Image (cartoon, rainbow, N blue to C red; front, side, top):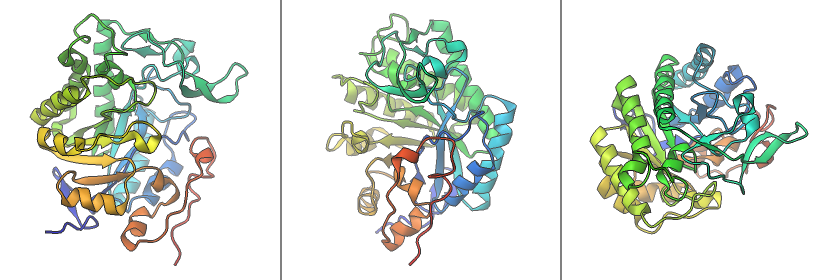
Length: 365
């Protein structure tokens, strides 16, 4: 049977109007960290998709590596996000928030009182950038600051920060949460043995390096239920100086099997080739399908042809699109009708202006 990716499907107990998801993308429009009416309008404009996953959302004041991102750790932020979730639900789409701790991919100007960022170790990602303030107070890309290694009890506190943010997400009427375990941020900093040199129960073996991720999954499941918890992963990703290591395949096979046991709602994998990093090896997604028995979303370099092929082969269940959604709010209709796509303007991706945010037009035949 040929699956029509533009027809309704199921995601756990949720009904999605199609098999297309909007991937999370940082947009940096919230100077005070609280979502506003314009955020609601932005997401509502893009609610032709079955599932929206929001931009990375801070779980605490110390979790940020980009200026002007929204959070989910105060009552005011919860109230702000209700504007967004209500607007998307009124358009018939479902919406998850991506919960984010960037770890060492940060700068002292992103941190409370100018303190050092935290990570699995004190190893600096000193050749890549956060979005903060330079020595002249000018906003822009700045080299990541040297991090401080988390103490064991602090690791457990961050697990609880994720759980509290998950609870707040449900208060804000999100349909679920996606944990950001990808792209070189804190969870992946624990997974990678070249960044994680810990000697406690969070370092060393695959099981120990995976412990932080799985404790977060377990804590959020205990708080909001497995049917509302998802995770994003980037196997073989190299963003933010994540070195290649020999146990990559074994690590993600272990994680896939552990996540299967927990019955989370989906795993969202990103192929980082589209971001200028390493591609997923040939056959990896097919192997991952044999390890993981739940819903799989794939993002990174997707188009209609690739999406339909992978979904009809049974390799994935939902196709996620990122940057194309920025400049094409009606992306689903464009894909369905094979209409041309408007190219994005990357210089407008970040910043407090509404230019490059709300002013993209729908297709006019």
